[in-house]
Length: 575
Image (tube, rainbow, N blue to C red; front, side):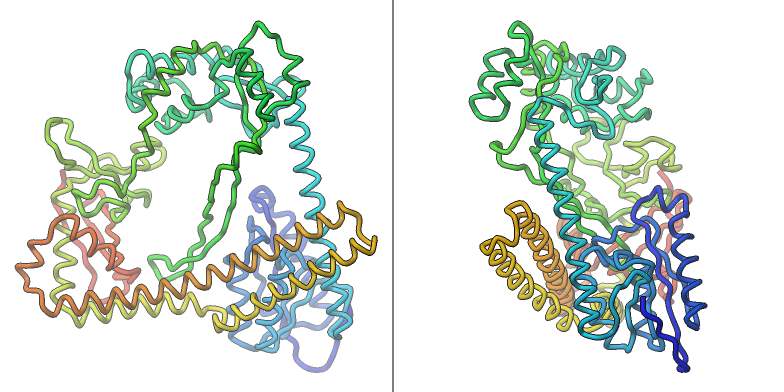
């Protein structure tokens, strides 16, 4: 990196990042990066304003607490340079480098890495940009080769070892196939028998296994009921005779060579590879205290069956009739939806446990099982994960907590001036998040410019391939890299658009609700059905925290009532 010594005052922010939780726990990588940055800053005469680190954060997104802090400091002014050890510490996607550079330039701040090859000249920026693209090209090529290796291995009839094998199996000595685990497979056979032949519900199976102390696949005590449905539908446990194996070969889902190695007199399970596509996106939102919170959203989509690869595994020993009966029993089952039952308005995640912060689920009274309504709220975490997940012991009487919530909301609805002020505050918080790092229109333009640049680079790469300067594999890897950049830009544009739409939706909901309340009498509010109350709660962004000591808290639209003069709490009676 070129020296920038001068007599002008220079202020720097030091930024370090590690990408895995293991590195974050050890702290070695962060410490090494910061030490190198301190030495450089001292040598070049920089005054260090702040050291910012992002432990355990991926460089595939800019949605990181540390990077948000850096961007806020730059926006405040007075920062000469932001320093990192390597360019990929800022981001692994060149498009994000482009966006950060443009954003920081507006505040007179440069972005520098100790490993930079160029300088501030156009030629220097071009050199660094080329190096970024080459690094991304190499990563794309490596990823493609890795994926090819996995596909080839699966087509050879080998299982790809992941964190743990399917329950009831263990890996063989070469770690590329299954063998039956005789300690856990009897539990699998029992699950199929109970569900298929004895008519036991998945919750009933869970109750039996927990009461007997049977360890879960991860070694815990409390089974997740969704596991049993997944187990029943898993083809690894279904015996496939020779004719079905031949059918898979005819479909092109299994290699004929793999099938030829199988014993024609035996049945086999099928372990599927390449059946699903996993896409992870990190998003930021306004939390209950007005601060930014970060969430990973994972989208799972099923690939076309023609892309699947069938890998034979040993027969699990589950009778065919047990498999078919169990699948028939669970075919209409689905994961219980916390938003599906709206008899009690606080369902669908509006009520949170004060012990662990998880949502609370409706539950029937044990003493009056014939009642056709749900009259308790129980902590969803304790219900499914046990006391180690949440200290709450007692359930929450639905009548009590619902009355508390409605009285709080009713008082708000009857005070339009206060309600408008609170909703305006919520909208302003959301607007601050949207505009945290500058003008959204400017940011959108930057991403649109990047899309145009990608199209030019794609055309150029194809021209180089025609001229024989790029091999087919190199062209394919380059196009994959450009497509990744295109998807990044499109994703960021969609996030910007979504944030703007959310703002518009909040403003429309506010105006519609306030206009409606002008003509509504108090007695009409009390006549609202539970579903209508739930809809009002959703518009207001209601959040209720049920504490075991009876000191419940309520807030709307992410307004922090603990810091406002209108604190809402209640010494509600306990169930």
